[in-house]
Amino acid sequence: MAAVRRLSPSFSAASLRRILLLRPFSSSSADAADQRVLTVETSLPFISHKIDPPSRSVDTNPNELLSFFRDMSVMRRMEIAADSLYKAKLIRGFCHLYDGQEAVAVGMEAAITKRDGIITAYRDHNIYLGRGGSLFEAFAELMGRRAGCSRGKGGSMHFYKKDAGFYGGHGIVGAQVPLGCGVAFAQKYSKDGNVTFAMYGDGAANQGQLFEALNISALWDLPVILVCENNHYGMGTAEWRAAKSPAYYKRGDYVPGLKVDGMDVFAVKQACKFAKDYALKNGPLILEMDTYRYHGHSMSDPGSTYRTRDEISGVRQERDPIERIRKLILSHELATAAELKDTEKQVRKEVDEAIAQAKESPMPDPSELFTNVYVKGFGVEAFGADRKEVKAFLP
Image (cartoon, rainbow, N blue to C red; front, side):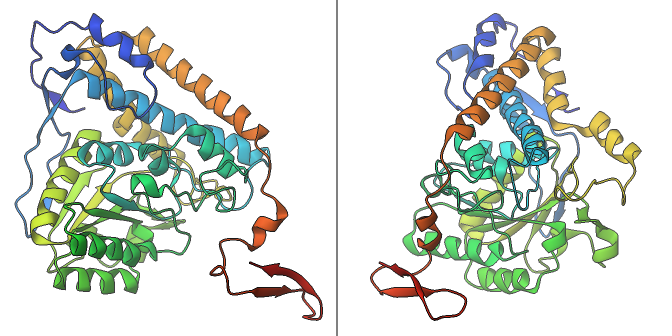
């Protein structure tokens, strides 16, 4: 658990407890006492490549600490519910769950703004929530409903929220990285002072397009941070079996890098703040987030054939990001154990209500099959398999 320095004795814990039931992913609370400074130390030191690492001391406040607990609890509960919905055949197709990795999504958001861009792979549900997406739109999209964040046409792998700088989940391994570098190019061109975080997994770290994009980004000093979420298994292949050098933070060679404890939300926050400041002045940086997924790679993977159950339970007991925050909250008497349980019950209720609402949303109209595919106004004709009968005329 992160080491903690003393909190001001004049701080009133009771004044904080009411924020436990704030809506998820809210960054504002009215009580001035919520903003009292609390300094914590990251669980592990940062390991750096060609750069001096940031300080291990991270400033936070009780409001943020409680928000971290709630936000990660919402993410965890959403993924557990998605697992059940998939097994009930209400979610079809591919589905990749994020439980265990919540500290990366929450810590990153704590360090940046919605004007900064994020683009990721197909394990994207919680990244979308972190960007301000609603549970209702998330579950509607998972179930292919019209009210989904991608109008029910993207499904699990293609969440999207352009108004919050979230450029989507992507199904092609590694393909989102060049796109993210393109977003960073636009940011540099427009001189808007923002950066892009291009996220990928250890399984995608060997993709050639990643190195091509990194090379040109370094040549042009683009404000892009490549974030390798190293959960140690690319599908069912352990990192050491797929990569001759699994030190992914060093993979940029000429590009600096940091290895970060991705199960420590404060380490992620500190690293992302440091990376943003660096990238705006100097160009690309690589962050390797040492994290872990509890579920299998996807719903067809039980997750226990290439790793032991003892390994999984060991990570849960020693490194779970939510439990780390729970211990900090309890040690500083910001809330009682019962109050944290009440928060988790409230989270469950919100998730259940969002699912019920999403189930009521209608499926997309069949005509939507032909929209958002071709440029409008070209008069494209769609034929059947025999190409003899025109099935639709696209506007």
